[in-house]
Image 1 (spheres, rainbow, N blue to C red):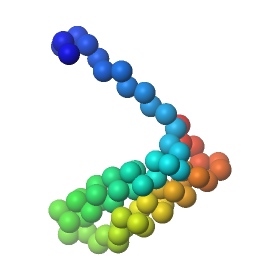
Image 2: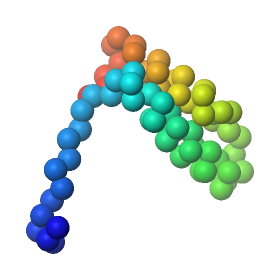
Image 3: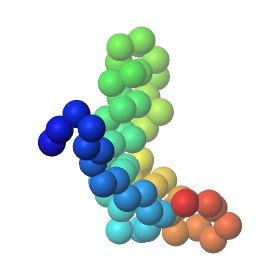
Length: 65
């Protein structure tokens, strides 16, 4: 790819099928930040973060796009 070429990026609304990957990313990001600053955990396990993302990506009225 040349310096003037931009990658083709598509942003789409999240779906419940995205919850597992997004929940793991959320867990990893917060766990790393919390550990670095000695903060209590926001999410005790990846499954809790995945559950939150599943709810968010399924709930009517929550903007996902």
